[in-house]
Length: 513
Image (tube, rainbow, N blue to C red; front, side):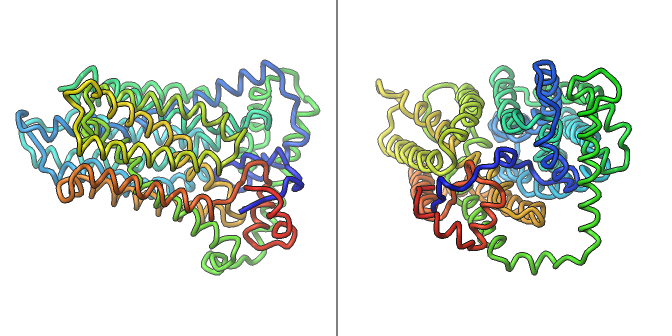
């Protein structure tokens, strides 16, 4: 799939924000051309605000990575209370099936109670989950299993809830020049949360309850840090609270003087866009099912759902959730908990690197490199499973392959399906279509996480690694022939492409996507 270099690039729309509250999203985009000039003080203020908002997401990252550090102790026969193999897989995978419901709840809360209060909800729900696990039963395995499942269901909802609020908030308070980088903080903080929980697991290998307590305390601190945050001016205007919006906008833009003309102009632009949106809402709109039949909707939907299949069945989330036990299966010579820390650290550093690579090289080249690197690493691990290197001078190879897999996965297959999900759908159905895609992706995640231990028992480590490697290779073929390039293209360009616009079709042969 190709786009012409001649298509005009609209920088204000290059990095679309996740869908949540349509009035706020449109208002933010509309004011981009006449927004208050970015000063150094305003830039620092906006960076700090975005960072504080995204601290909430760290707890969700901890929740994603927690099974990795707890599974070994929970299934270790030398401990007083253990889970069966089936119970352990439910413990590890149940969050994936709950995340979509949290995502649906997120959209509702963002609109009804605002960005700031939604962040409150995420923290409170997370604290409840960590508290349940901290005080979980230590004598009865059946009671322990029920408590853990309840806690993981709750944290799964929190993880789904956290998928958009912080990035939406950051996008709405950020100056257009900073919006792209600040919206990537959500992915970075998720990775940081996983690294922190892996590190705690390494330090407290035999006390996962203590790790839960630390995570709960951290989340409590995160809840407190949200208190001084200003509410999104875009959301306030959408709720007819323009005076509050103006007060908070002055804080965000680092302006102290009253009746500042540019602040007034920005508030007026927000009000005008809200009015236009409400006017369009009053007209009759086709049903969601009718809209799904349009090529600009069903084509990207099929592409993104397929991309999520390759993401999940290439083993990425298996390594993230089962990091410590996977390291043992892969024959890693170092401490499995230390291996998990290396996995987390690699993901954090590569997520930071990804923001620069995506801006420079686009989406397709990193995705192609990612699939190739992942395949090579998995085939290498399969070879190490057939010809063990544990007691040889080459015992470092499985560790290197595991780290290299996370590095290459983060460059493409791990991050791109989520980031592109907000780019490829038309504005009118972006929330609905993105929700369907995320629901499908997390369902695939649940299937692979639940079945991974059974696959290892049934066909052996080496064949599981070969399966992951073959899926990665097929992913390369999919990316090459079907995944569109979205770098530097406006949302309208992308919509026209899927609709079959003659202009885009004529131009697409000029330049590789």
